[in-house]
Length: 351
Image (cartoon, rainbow, N blue to C red; front, side):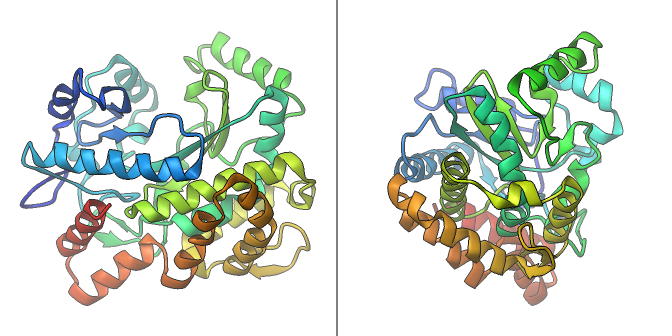
């Protein structure tokens, strides 16, 4: 989030950020997004989670310095606590103008921020199977990453109201099931041929294949204020992909799509205090207990991948709370959305 240094409200300055990055070392790692008050920074392709951690810190430190050089501040969270979508300017790119022209109000109110993780997959049919295998774990990722309890200056009662806002988008939410990559590709071709979408990137499922990159992309998480949380969740996602690739996952067959949707909603509403439907045994289970069970299953894969330390840091989030818990705690102490935003800025800077 690009923020005014004094008021901490969103400001429309992405073009100046992009100009400052032209021909620089980070030029390929920064881009515009839907609104001029957004800037997207990303890592290059990384071979290990340790490399991800180093690159995330390097990129975050540069982003903070780049904004400060222009008298701005950066904040990273699932929503801005008090800024209004009506005051945001759409980025001057044809792609985003076309999106707003098609989706209208739904796009204009999309003042939300996410954290995406790509994991390389060596076979397109495997990528399709992974969509189904990861779907039962979406509620875990939502609960761990929830970082958007405020909207328009008011508490929403949700740990992640970002999911409520984005759910109005077509072709969003937990992915449907496909039998093969060929079936997926045929559906995409029909959507393109009918003029419904420009290309497959206009499909915004929580988990989707990204054929151009050769990855499975997990998109369900709120933007994370702390780099350490982002690293831990990147490790969680990578280990989930390895686990689903190499072992039979009982949750995939047992968890009906209706239950996947319900569990995701519960996690968005209650965060780490959610109780969800056990995707394997049925019945009720605290999402924190489900996460602990998943961590035990992922442990051997994390050791093989060399990210067991980063994965174990997920337990710190379980112990200390997610970003939503932090925001709500600061707001309870100050009753001031600006002070809460200031805390987000300080944590964003402490990379």
